[in-house]
Image (cartoon, rainbow over all chains, first blue to last red; front, side):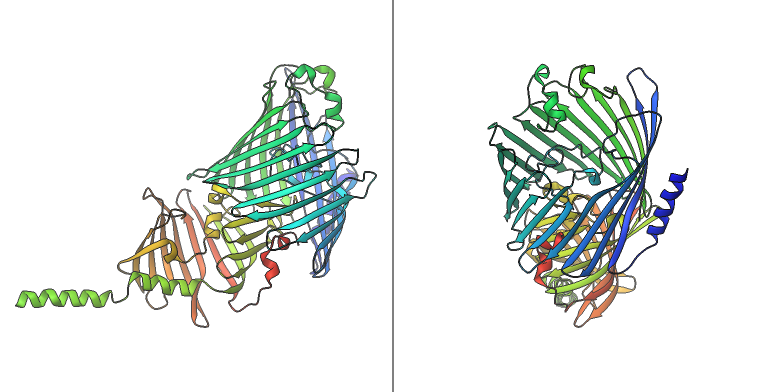
Length: 358
Length: 244
């Protein structure tokens, strides 16, 4: 109860603050999750998420961004929820200073470095190579402590380089340009483990289809990671999106999956071939319905994720989501008991999120 | 003799009534609505049934081919930016600190939950570059005498194959526009109002658009402040400005 009052006091105090150079915003989100085990009863969890965003702009050429978050979980038992980590403490998700010099900009601190053009798979982005983007909010993606230099060359071209400042000395460089209706990027990453990767990414128009792709060649294993995607919107507003991912580090037989490397983050996915299909329909300007299907083409397991989003008021949104996994026991999305430390494999998830932005 | 006189008189009267051609009218419209440089403060109000959502944004334009917009309110959309350079359009999402190219048929999707599509926002070329204009009559809208024109696409890459436009005779500002698909289906209806004079040009500071594929929906765009002589720095029309 004490925690709740402290939480509320911080929230209401900060929501009212404001200054021209000092801008404060953020969001408060309440998620109620029901996890239904196969043949079991529902387990309930209530997650409170407070995220603050503080920007200090003393001049036109310098800005400081601070983004702390505080998550509080009220639960009946430990259950795995995507993006729910570091409970009951303030986590500095992003904190950086950015200087805009005449020829370049420099960003130093914990920040998001988002490369690539994919929706689910971004092989050129070593920090967020594989994210269930339909299931988690943008803010839950991984940030890194780095120094980043961005050098614009013309209107839509430039160089983007970064060096991690933590224990790892990973570094990367990307050159981007726009040719006709296509954005093109060439990248190189030194993974600081004796290996490196070279990448190509693109996004553009092909007739009425949006097309996107990423190709990465890994120096150590000499394997490739490939993402190809496309989207289309019909006249009636129904949008379709598809992505195929080829994972050269994965296995085509589930018996050969390298669960240890996967959990350690050494490989982006277990299997070799994946497919994402998504469709969305804007029912009216305030309501959207989405259906997402992520399939492992090798072991034929899948996640089906329908969702409904509605703007309840100017700054208040509600999301109803469900996650249904399918496949045989031993597959990626229905892992064997030996690879399921949570004991929640095969569970269905129902989520109701209410988010207030301020 | 008398019948010949009548015919000639009718022909003369008809030619006087349409002394101005459709192309000339559209040229005047283009002169009003296109500009070399501009800075604007705007409010977009989305009506769905009885519910209303407002979004504020600032925008800059340079010539026909470059424009930049940044949403400043409400909080959930604050910091979302758009950049248009020629036929390319990008969106910046601060939540992921990422620039996303809006391409293909995604351009047909709703922009920020409004009745405007990305294609509507992207459209900037002169109407006569893409359409042939035919003056088909005269009508009165809100007590303003208007020319009525049918526009038919003469190139393939257009958002709307046909348009019907009511142009105010006094100001050469369109007061109403109906937008049609190739099939002839009416897709959207726009109205323009609160026409103000900025130097030698007339400009509608209130635009409404209704997507007829949706029920009970209408978006109103109000130009709160407009400066057609603004010297907008070139740096706004770069991808670097999106992440600033």
